[in-house]
Structure formats: C-alpha cells, structure tokens
Image (cartoon, rainbow, N blue to C red):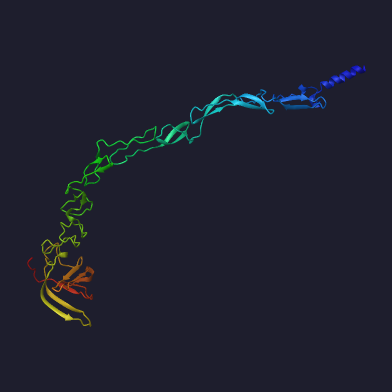
Length: 353
C-alpha cells in the first residue's frame, strides 16, 4: 500500500510542468535551432547554450539563401542579388517572397546617357535624360558652325563652302578667307561708291565711300547747321536760312559786302571819362533789299558788325535781338552798353545790287 503511493508521487514529479521545474531536456526547448536546450537534473532549471557555428537555421528573410548559426544567433548569408535594369533603377529583393523588383531612382540622380554632347545627365521618371548640350560655333570667319561628336563631345570645324566672307560694312566688298590665318579679307569698294553715314545732312552731294570709309557728302558740315559744306554759302558760320542779300553766293553772316555801309560821314570824339575810351561814329547807307520777302535787315537772330582797318585793329560786335529796338525806320542796339552802341537807319533809296 505504501509502495504504490510512493510510485504515484514519483510519476507525478517526472511529468511535472517546466514551470515547476524541468524533468528532461525536451522540457526546455525554445524552438531556436541556434541554441542547445538542456535540463539541469539537480536544480531542475533549463539551460540554453549556443549551438555549433554553421548549424543550419532560418533567419526569416527570404532574400538570404544560406542561413547558419553563429555565436548562438541565426545569421543570413548568400543574399539574393537583384540586378538593376539600368542606371536609373535599383534592384530590390522582397524579404517575404525573395523576388526581385526594379524601383526608379529619384529624379535628379546623376547618370550618363552615353552622349558626350550632353553635359548634364540626370534621371527623370526612370529614364536617363541629357541636357545642357554642347553648342558648336565657328572658330573664325572662314569656318561655319560644326556638329558635336557624341562619342567625344568635340565639335567639328568645317570650312565655308564656298569660302566667301560677307562684307564687314557698306564700304567693303565680299571677300575671301585666308586659310593660313583664318581671317577674312574684304577689299574696300571703289572710292565714290554710294553709302549712308546716317548724318541726315542736306546735301546735293551724296555720301560716298572713300578709302573704305563712308564719309559725308559735300565735305561734311563743320558749322553744324545741317547743310553740307559744298552747298553752304557760309560753311564756317551756322546759317541754316542761307541768307544772301547781294546774291553773290556768300552768306550774309560771313560776307563783308552784305549790309555794307556806304560811309557818308565819319567823326571821332573823345570820352567824357579819363582814360583811353572814345567813340567813332559813321553815317552812311547799307546795302539792303527790303522788297525781298525772305531778305530783310532787322534784329531777328541778332546783328553782327565787323569793323576793319589798315592797322588791323579789327573789332567785331554782336547784338542779340533783345538788345535792339525798332525806331520806325531805324534800329538801335546796345544802348547803354559800352563800348559798342549802334543805330542802323534805312536808306532813302535802295542802291543797285
């Protein structure tokens, strides 16, 4: 009776739960192939030591093909290599299935489109796209723009055909290229060839080429009155109205015979002040043409008087219109202005012109 009870108790301890202590090694299994599970018969506790390195295991990653234990841990090896279909994609392995896919790289990722004539290549939506192309330009006037070699990125340099250079300006003719220097030689047009300086000066003589340069017709306009010197009746003094009282072809502004005084009386008197001042008075007749609608003697535009003598004590005086006033049949200028005060009176009859 006592022996049967003791056997029953012993059987209960041998099949006891690991939570109450282990009875055998299988009670300590943790399901990890990289550990060796054992039960300490004395303490009835489980022990887990590292399995031998190289023991086969499964790391749960379908992208590793050879999994082995190392230091008690399952380590994946021999990974599946997913090749990228091109430089703008990347191969990716799915750890759940072990299958490869190709994902596009981000836009702007650097790549090479294989064309040396595109200087900036980037991935765009999975395609390598070239930009910033090499621009080919002529190296000189004897060549034309070439084409870029996609293998080298170097431009060709074809010669002109025919080798003719365009005129450099309106006074040059079409020329030819000098292959030795690459320079274009354009001979000048013959002197007298028509051209246009753009000066807009009125002239009966047109602008023309002289020595390969376009020059203003009629010798230019040195007095700046927009009438060329060849047509200007007074080229040294501006006179755009071209006034010529005596019709001798010399403009009034520079003609000493226009409005020339026919002296009828002359007097000299000293100044009431001390010093070198005095006055000379001259009376006479002026050459005028009052009947002409375009010629008249008045102060509009001012009056210039030049007085010359044999001693070369020449004097020139000018009175602006504001300094003159009309006195009926005469004009007085410079009143109160020394040393020049004048009064011009109309003649009683017109002299012959």
